[in-house]
Length: 289
Ligand SMILES: O=C[C@H](O)[C@H](O)[C@H](O)COP(=O)(O)O
Image (cartoon, rainbow, N blue to C red; front, top):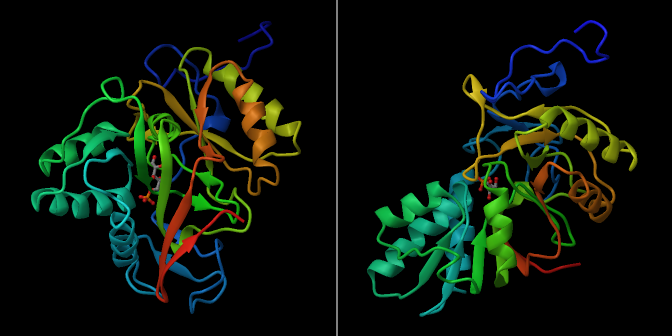
């Protein structure tokens, strides 16, 4: 675009004329995870890979998710108002909850995504909206990363906004995870940032600047779903920011919230009451350090 001072953008992915800068290229599908999150307690070599569905080095990851989900179920009491999370670990919990409900447990849930709402409906778990039931007793949800202070990265499944609203409306939040999610410092998992589609390039640049002010850099990419951008349940876009290591999550959270166009980010700070972590050694409860 000669003379405008603006680079030439390819045509927009959002169907609204919004630009697609090179830096916002799609993220490759995370088929395999490199084992960098937590060297213990598994009998894996540092750097060894395992399949996302859990074939290497420790018991099937899906089985660990089930184990964490079952342990969390013990905290669900008759009559509770429940926030119900999103993702594969949350789905293990929902299936276990469905069996309890079929056996007579009475709960009323608020779903953190359309996907979760559909699964709950298929299992006859009663679901209402957060407008109908704005205060909740307990939310149970998964996470992408958990640090020793129970700070979380969430949003790998794109549900961060509703998940955060629901968690904040709950008296307690229990995080369920397999032990690969434990990290010393957040940031190996790209941080999801939900943004409004309007002015997304300006928002992207402002995020870069805010992060640079905290000494953070790295790729920030627009999440894709097939050929087009991934659209959240609330109609927004997601940027995944690979900062690598986030030494001050609170400062980054505040800096991101100050950017117009940022709807929410995947740093969950001060929301988790405790975490139920499943590994080959069993289930441990992680309290805030
Ligand atoms: O948006 C998705 C959520 O934050 C999930 O809870 C998170 O990505 C963890 O998902 P999973 O249990 O599938 O690893």
